Length: 558
Ligand code: TEU
Ligand code: CA
Image 1: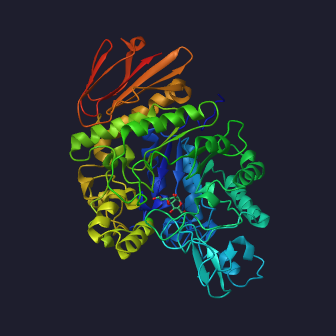
Image 2: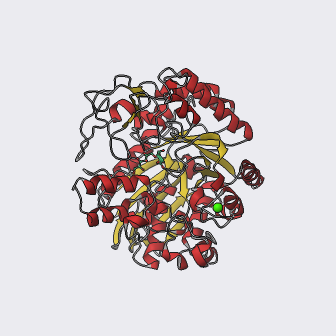
């Protein structure tokens, strides 16, 4: 397998709005990120992925961009960005920026022109269709509830929006539009950025016919997935992007690819490097989904999860490159979802066990702000506590239609809403967790007095120091980066165990991902091997291991 810096890196995701406010307006900003670079250096990560900070009306917290080459004033100025980039580089930290080009904001000048008349030169920058039988062109539902089509009075046609009505989809079949985007990407690359995280990049190519989709379970709308996700020309467009932009620089490029399969991943992130360097798959995040999309309080099944992550570990080995993650700005907090946040000790222990589970795998790990502290879901009470457009629209649609009662839906939102990951970073025990001196744009989780960075930096056995150690170990051992993976105990309902091997070296990772004690046998070759890292005090005696709840260990032959 080819070696590369982006395979050997650990990425830290910053959601600027929620990371650090520098001017007391209650919104995190770029100067705030700069002021915390030493913290990230201390953690040991190599790359920072910044969620959007571009000009944006903010309907989806910046994933609705109205100027790709400017900074939204609440995040600062272009000088603030340049300073952040320079200060990061001075510390040996790379900066990856978010590329949101499946759609723009409805306030982007392209769309303002496009909607102004049917023969405007920019009409075909977006996807316009005539209605059918007095309604939209087809039955597709948007990812943010309602129809995926919005009627526009001015020209009497509908435009496609796979997300919010304010996020019209760009028409990638238009070569002029593609050139505009490639030009904008080169502009950022020439500034010195180190890569792109590409928002829903698997959706940029739409099948031209656009027939009705199969009805989504429990919904009046049809699914666009078969005609939009991994659409007919997506690989051609990414190869063109590679030829005209990506291949001219030394970049980490990660595609956010909902609907990704192993075979598709081996194309998007192929080892020959003709498209992207890696992709995010979503299958493990969807394990606790179901008939009502993600709105439920179900738990993930460990046996299924092991089979699934193993499929990805083995399927990509030598063919493409995995991204390893539990958290991002769209997911609830993993310790509340998979672990146990009911007490300080259990929260810390389960957060470590969950982290270890993926940090010993093949791929590039991503850490989302606050994950390294074991931050939890937030105790949102009423709908007014939520800010996320997906959550608010889903509440209106599903409660409005009578599918769920308000209390049911609020319960689902408390468990799964994206806002759980968007509460401010908990820096210390001062007011508002040290995030802002003003009024935060979303509630601060009241548990900040006991869960915060200052406390954990000062305590050697904290979750923070555990992540620091995981990152250090990855930097020290190519085995952890490149080694091949084998699952053990596939049917065990408590233990996630696997081996990695590279040449003469190997390791065994055993994690009790449950709240009950567990036992297992250790393969003979690891009897007496050195312990690389552990959680709790697992009892290891020759080939027998006894694990308390959330205990874990890694044995290595180096
Ligand atoms: O997310 C795409 C995406 O698939 C999610 O919005 C998904 O539908 C949702 O999280 C499932 O609950 C990207 C961004 O990461 C997200 O923040 C944006 O809202 C979205 O695209 C639109 O740009
Ligand atoms: Ca601010």
